Image (tube, rainbow, N blue to C red; front, top):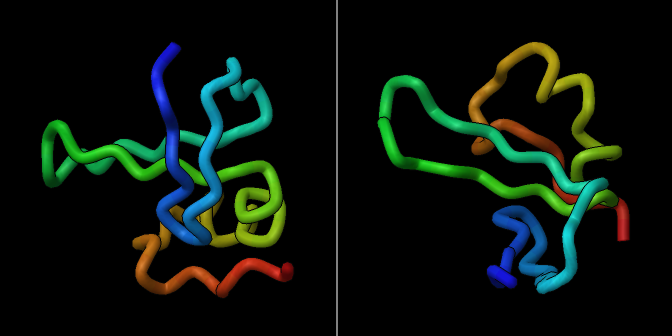
Length: 61
């Protein structure tokens, strides 16, 4: 399994992370932004609005 790291909080997972979110930047091919379930939940509005991750709020935990 591939090790995934949340770009927002640093949480890692080697399991099949079905609840994690993957954001691919169309302006920078090959750049991927992983978000754990907690950070994805905290930033769902920003993700849906397609805001750059640098403008997302910090995780709630």
